[in-house]
Image: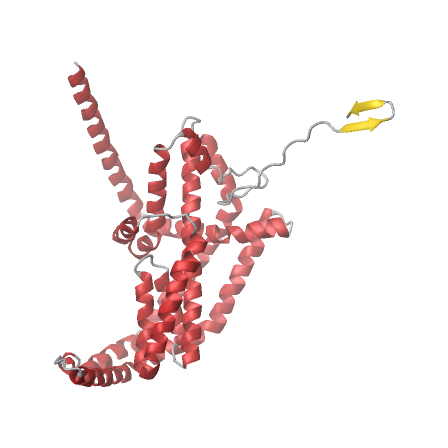
Amino acid sequence: MVIRDAWIRALVIVVLAIAVLYLAGLVWQVASQFADILLLFFLAWVIAFILEPAVVFLRLRGRLPRPVAVTVAYLGLLIMLAGGIFWLVPPFSRQVVQVVVDIPTYASLLDAQVVALQGLLEERGLTVNLAALVNEDDLVRRAEAVAPPILSNAVALATRIASFVLQLAIVLMLSYYVMLDGHRITQGLLRTVPSTIREDVVFFFASVNRAFAGFLRGQLVQALVYSLGVAAIMWAIGLDLVLLTAVVNTLAMLIPFVGPPLALVMPLAIAYLENPDSFWLAFILVNVLQAIVLNVVAPRVMSSAIGLHPLLVFVGLLGGARVAGVWGALFGVPVVAVITTMVSFYHATLEQRRRQDAPFRLPDADFEVVSTEPRPPEPEPRGPEVATSGRGVRLG
C-alpha cells in the first residue's frame, strides 16, 4: 500500500511538472508575440530603477513631494540627454565616417606591421610566413568594397536613428509613470496576494530589487569609469578616435564576463596601428586600469548583491542571449541571481528569511520607497520621566 501511494505521488508530481512546462510554453508563445512592447515596459522599469536614488535624494534633502522630485529627476535626465546629443553626436558621427573612409589606410598600416613582425620573428629564428596570411592588396580590396555600402546607407541609418529616438521617448514617458505610481501598484499587488504566500512574494520583490540594483549600479559604474579612463589614456598618448572608443568600450563593459576582454581590443588596436611605439605603454596602462576597475571599483559598488559563481554567470549570459538576444545577455545575470536567491530562500529557516528580507520595506500610500539599504534602527521608547521636588519624587 505504501509503495502504491509512493508511485501515485510520483506520478502526480510528474504530471504536474509536465502541465507546468506546457503552460509555460503557451505563456512564452503569447509573450513572444508582444516582445517589443514588453521590452519597452522593461526598459522603462530599468530607467525608473536607476533614477530611484536621485528621487530619494531629492525627497530627503530637498523636502520635495514625490511627484515634484520625480519630475525634477526626469527633467535632469532630459537635459543630460539633450546636452549629450548636442555636444557628442556631431564629433561621434565625424569619427565614424573617418573610420569608414580610412579603412584602406588601416589595412595598409596593418600590412606594414605584419611585415615588421615577420622580420622580428625571423631574427628570433622563427619561420612563420605571416605575410602570406595578410595580403595588403586583398585587405585594401575588401576594405574598399565595404566602405561605399556603409556610406551609401545614410538614409537607412537616419531612419533607424529616428525610430530609436521615438522608442526612447516612449520609454521615458512610460518610465515617468512607473516611477510616479510604481509604489502604489506594488502595494496594490501585494494586497491581492493571499497571506499564506505573501512572505514569499515580498521576498521575491526584495530579491529582484537587490539583484538588479547591485547589477545595474556595478555595470554602469565600471563601464563609465573604464571608458573615461581609457579616453584619458588615449588623449594623453595622442591617439585619435577617443570618443568612438569610449562609446564602444561603454557598451562592451555592460556585457557581463565577456565584455572586459572585448573592451581591450579597440584602444590597443588603435594604438598599434597609429603609433606602434606607444603600444606597450597603452597596453600596460589599459590593463592596469581594467584590473583596478574590475577588482576594486566594481566589487565595492556591487557588494554582495549578485554573489554568483562564475559558472552561473555564464549560464545567465548564454541563456539570456539565446532567449532574448542582446537584452538577454545584459540582464540574464540578475535574473539568475534572483532565481538562486529564491531557491536558497526556500531552504532557509524562518529566522534566516526574516534577516534576508529585512532591508525591504513595503511602500505606503503617502511616502515610502523600496530600498536595498537597511533602515536605521528605531529609537527605543523612553520610560517615564522622573521629576524631583522638595516634597519627594514625582513620576511624569
